[in-house]
Image (tube, rainbow, N blue to C red; front, top):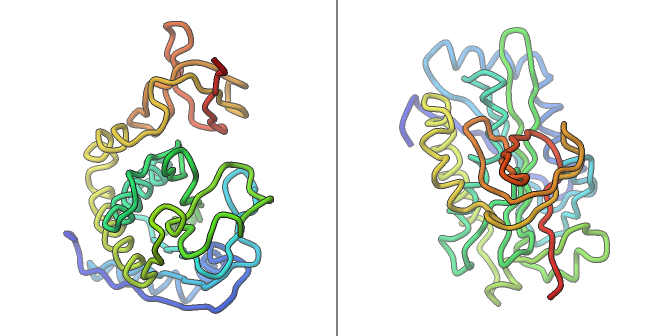
Length: 265
């Protein structure tokens, strides 16, 4: 990693409601925000990571629940922001790129980024990422929750999942060393976040688009600022917006739930 000295403090839990909720509770403590301000004033970087063996109230995007049984890698990084909140909205894509490259250090097939915050292997969800902004008058932070289906079969998630899922065990037939995977993810993620703060998403955008799931396919985006949109997925722009070609007119959208339309021959 480049940039200022990095101090990453870790907390471990056997079971917890949600590592994102724990990070939120932690950041709302005055003494913790003061530590972050002091570190910034000294030209240092301070962040925290919360790791749980299981979550009993894991959360996903759009208010969905996320099953987090033992055997997965469930953690949250609490990252004091050195960038503006508008730029921070592209963080889920940068985080997805980092996690994908960390996962692929093992024997896992290529990971694709499902805009804006999931990772797919062979079209099935293997990882979910939830970024939440904690804004403040003097210092803000982003809470990046990451859940990787690892050492259990996908049957442990059914029937509550709303999207086809897979796990590293199902894909490789082998158990994953969770500590090694966590170290790889943190290395990739922290390095990219430090660069993101100085250079924005631009250096990462070609790699994100190269990994983007369903490019060139017909998709539907529901719940967007333009309502339901159907068209051809063209990519992601520098604001993190998904680009959908609707009959030759490309629409850039920031919110919504993206799905691929499967046609029957």
